Each structure stands twice: as C-alpha cells, then as structure tokens.
Image (tube, rainbow, N blue to C red; front, side, top):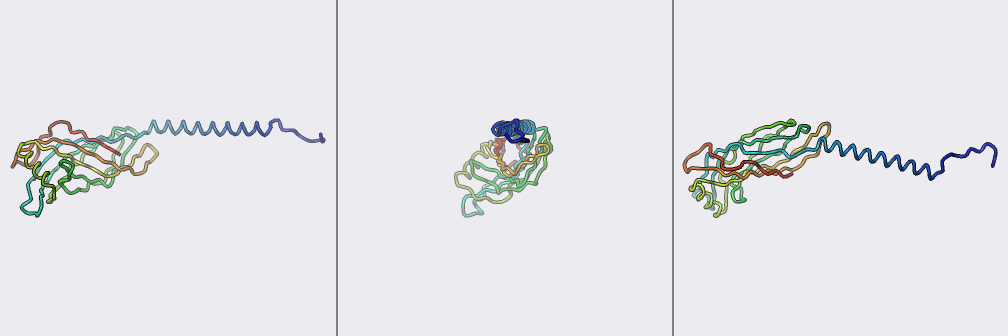
Length: 206
C-alpha cells in the first residue's frame, strides 16, 4: 500500500444505507406531522337547519301563462353552525331555491357571501320567489291539493362553494349542496309565518 494512503472507515454500501435510513426517517416524521396537523385541524361539515318559514304567496298562475305555472313567495330563516373550534369557513356563490317533488318552484335567489368564525353560528333569512315559474301539470295539481289539505312538503335547496381555513392553513374551494326537507302547515288564504312540522335539520354534501 502506498505511503500516505488513508482508508475510509465506511464502505460505500454502509454510507448509502445510512443515507437511506436518514431519508426514510425524515419522510416518516413528515408523514406523522402531517397526520397530527390533519387530526387537529380536520374540518367538519357545517350544520344547516331551518328555524322558521313564512309563505306569502302560493297560487296557481296558469290563467296568466300558456302552460302550467305557479306564483310563489317564501321566506326561510336558516341557521348555519360551524362546530369546529379550530377552523373558520368562508362561503361564496350561495344561492337558494324551493322545490316540490324534485322540481324547482322558485327561481334561484342569490345569498350574500359569508365568513364564519370557528365554533360560530350565523343566520340568514332570504326571501325566495316572487316570479311566475312554469311547472308540470302534476306539480301544479299536487301543490294545490296539498295546500287545500293544509300540509305541504317542500325542499329548500342551497348551493354554492366554501373554503375551510384550519388554523394557519387554507383549503381550496369546495362545492356544497344543502337540502332541507320541511313539512309546513298552511291554511288557504292565510299568509305569513307558518308552523314547521317535524325535523328541520338539513343534509349537507361537499
């Protein structure tokens, strides 16, 4: 062996294994950190509920239209609750409409953008309707029959998008679809606040 030659204590294979162990450890630690942050800041769906309903108009408008049509005007008070105490929520492009037997009976009504703090509740009271809406003959007849009976099943639908803000992080926009099936008591010729019959919780899909 030539004088002055210095031999490494570690072979190339040992060095490569050491580097692989370091990289694997860093990846595992990063994964654990991400998992912990996700569990801590994991967003949950907001809770929607209908608190009250008013019906100002629900009439047959066929006489003023060439096909089956109705004229309606509703107002719903809706509670939106963010139950997560670490995540705020931003809502945008919200609109609401009322449906009967899966057919819209009002045009969509735009709602204001909302920012909801963590563990907070906001309420909105949109007035929906006011225009003549063409419907099928079956829907028109069914609505008039159930109005005369005094109990009308309706579906309030809210669509839009939301963005979660968990702590220092921020998600992208996520589409949201809310459906609230409500059963209202109604007396023909009487307008204004109507009783809600049964549950008023809504289903939320994102």
